[in-house]
Amino acid sequence: MYPQSRVLIIAGSDSGGGAGIQADIKTVTLLGSYAMTAVTAVTAQNTMGVKKITLIPKKNVQKQITMILDDIGVDAVKIGMLYSVSTIKCVYHILKKYNLKNIVIDPVMVAKGGSRLINNNSIIYLKRLLLPLAKLITPNIPEAEVLSGCSISNKKDMIQVAKKILNMGPKNVLLKGGHLRSKMIFDILATKKEIKVFSKRKIRTKNTHGTGCTLSSALATCLSQKKSIFKSCKISLKYVDRAITYAPGYGKGFGPLNHLVLINSKNINV
Image 1 (cartoon, helix red, strand yellow):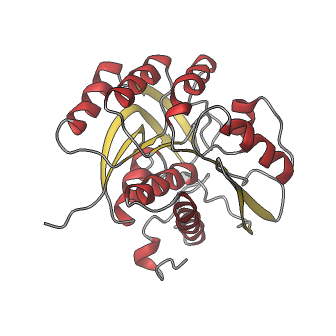
Image 2 (cartoon, helix red, strand yellow):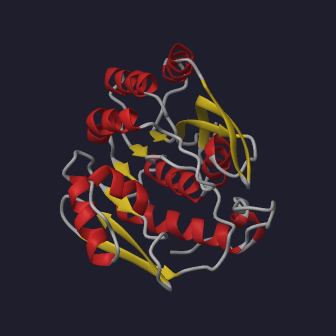
């Protein structure tokens, strides 16, 4: 046998293949782990935007997850689009019942094209129920502003907001800085012990669809492989950076990443 670490993905589907569980499965697989999924919603979308969202009933979501947990087992969990309060409560009760670890939450709120992927009431329950269970939460700047109620305009603001979100219960926060108007990108890792800043030059491109999904799945994969939080962030951020750099350029809007970058170019060394 050739065992792999196991990553459960709880998220929505993207018919265009650039984000959602499609991006998650590619990421987990390319980084060497075994991907399993529980689909929370089916979206009709492409690089131009989301046209329709169909929620999966909570009992269906529950059954998808428990079938995996009762047989295959899980080493890490990536949580993406949940959308509704009922789905959030359903996922929360399962996470608690099975005492799952290495939970990475990507607090998906708005699609790259601007469509809302969660309602305001759901955000309250996301903060109240799921954040305290997270090993790591990965908000971008707009999501962090919603979670914290604070505005962010520079790196100093990012650090303060990351600390504020950390006080909401997650063990670690990776605040992504791609939305800042700057030539550099600063990603802030806040832990209970320290603040780490990852910096890189911003890539001028529209091929950024699915960056959040890809990053959070990469992080869950690294944690499932027993890597440290710092090492997981370093590897995952580099993977996403490479995947953006070598993007295939599909579509008329925000194009997908190249998840095959580890095969198509040199391996990532950190």
